[in-house]
Image (cartoon, rainbow, N blue to C red):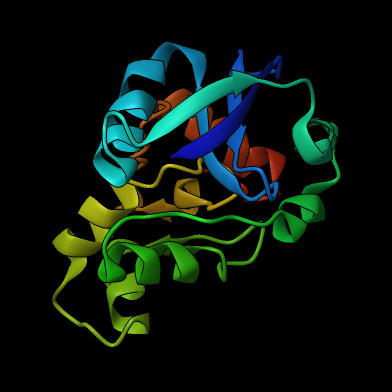
Length: 171
């Protein structure tokens, strides 16, 4: 059984759950009001009875590092280790998301092309939407082809805030 160490931190955008395994690899980062979605994703990835949650203050220093990100140390999220389940395709999409530089964006079609799967924008969008490690696996850096702020489970307002925070100038 997988043990998930969990903490809930305050951010400028509201409370955020931080969950990692016992090796301090992030398994989930999710906004408090979307904790049902997080539980659903964890159940899909590890089985409903395949994990246990244990409260832990600042596990592996990860909570502090996420606070540092919100305080302006944008590069810190690139240093945070993740370990996710999901399908091979989902993990490939999530890995590619981490390669989008801070302050830049990509649309779903571009991400599909970068993965060598032109025409798979919808599949990329679905994988993006099932990303369990919000912010660190920066799904907020992917927008619609026409520049619309679509597809962020935390909501458009948060997506826009995160992009501005990272230096992307919204029009």
